[in-house]
Length: 243
Image 1 (tube, helix red, strand yellow):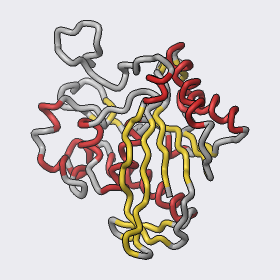
Image 2 (image 1 turned 180 degrees about the horizontal axis):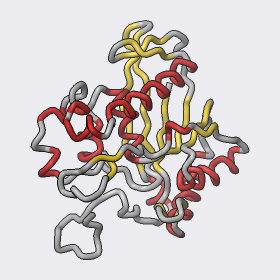
Image 3 (image 1 turned 60 degrees about the vertical axis):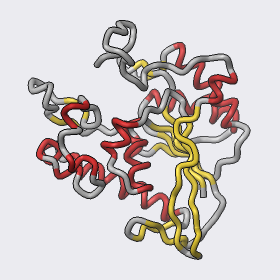
Image 4 (image 1 turned 45 degrees about the vertical axis):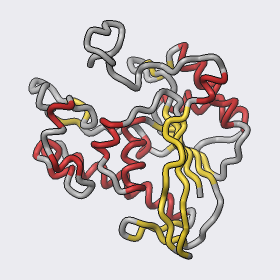
């Protein structure tokens, strides 16, 4: 089985849709995805994900199943550098999160006091539960850190979602703390991540990331990737995002 996880195009967060650039990215993405076969298609309920999916679905003549648990991960915390208001749980300053060894541990990262107060672990567990329930429908049942290949297949599932949420799914599949993925990787808008099962022993499957955030469709269309996945490369780069 293959899982194709797509981040939405360049976002207009204020209106929960895409920018003009984002619509162009979504169109280039559709040229790529519409040439592929998908056995199941799933989408976040958020507008920017649904708008990203729209050109592909139109070309395929398909509809996506809307899954509430695929929305951008909503948990909020009192981030150490922003004591006056809550922030999304998956964006910390590097000097703050790296000071806590538990954040690197896939079993302990949510036990951090800040995460416990925000009930982040419970919300991640619910996302993973829903994800595993879907995979079980397709024949792969979670068994510890691997999956039992009850009905192994070469099916391909397509997901339109978000960076923060996608990192949770990837961390769950390969046994990595999402904090490491949230802060150590970047997926540009319309980046395509492909994950495949490996059944090296009959009946036992694990997942391997084949590509992370591939944007070759943008380069093929003559477009540079949007910067919204990243922060400033140097602090004095005034045109690049700092917060």
